[in-house]
Length: 242
Image (cartoon, rainbow, N blue to C red; front, side):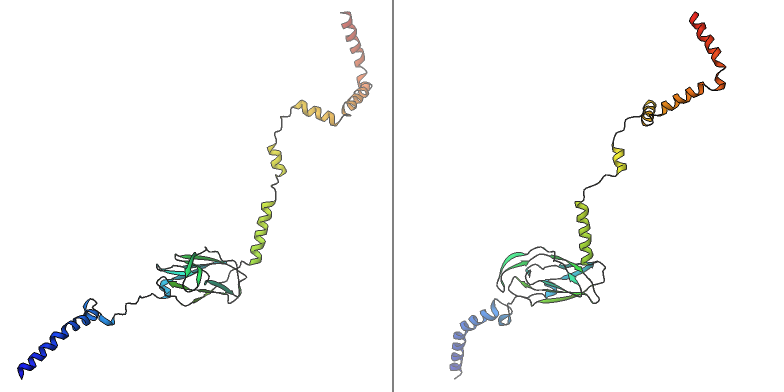
């Protein structure tokens, strides 16, 4: 009886060994985790995939995304809105064309993204609402993210900026005018002599020689000059005899 049981047990072990080996190779052979290995890709959090920062400089807000390797941001899914203030046109580079499995033909950013946001007309309680969305190249898409940024008070307004720009444009279009003093200094003036001054005075006051002539004639008939006539006559006659 014992011999019969031994033969049966030996047969069961012999025929079941190949099946155990085949089954074990799938679950416990090459893979140490066996059937409990999920073999799924792991993804980082959205803040790790797209670290977001911002800072304000008076009437300008700078936004900064550091895109992790293997991930990308959508350009068309990026929006910036202002509350209790006005925003100018966003200053940013265009993304790269991309054929996306979720949104089709779209533009994406795979490297750090910097956006400048001009701001005007600040009011109490002003803030900027930023929305963005990105995906992993492995095929996982994050839900849209929203960030609310409080804005500190600043004095510049849209109307002031337009006025300053208009004034600058007018200054650029106005031809330069040289002041009279500069014009006089740039012109070359010839040297003026004493004879030139005398000729100019005589030309301006033509009656001056006539005045001196009349005064000389009048002086010749004054009593103090009459004693001089005999002396002058003798001198003239004496020179004639010589």
